[in-house]
Length: 113
Image (cartoon, rainbow, N blue to C red; front, top):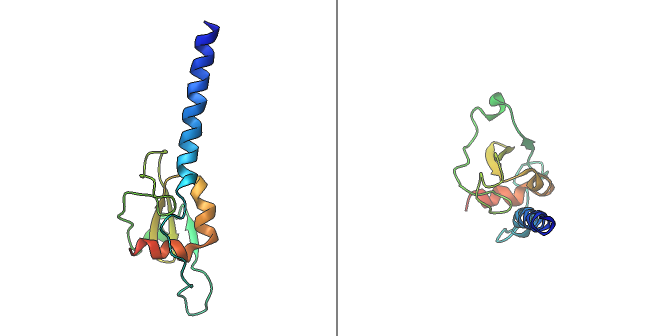
């Protein structure tokens, strides 16, 4: 019985580790950095979990994958919605938010590909 419990715990931890690693492993693949496109030269504004009012009149995100990691949306729970300027984007998890905030122009370019 003790060995069975240890095996179950080991498999659970392994699965959790693979899930977390899957999100962080693919971040930034195939992304080309670009200069900010605003007239002021500053990075586009990022709003995480925007309100319905903030989403009104913005461009929809139609891809089925996370803009940061490339993971399928919904595989790690409810996708995180964010705005980069007037463009909606979706992230697979909260772990991708810091990368999006660090260089939003890079991921805004990825949306247009």
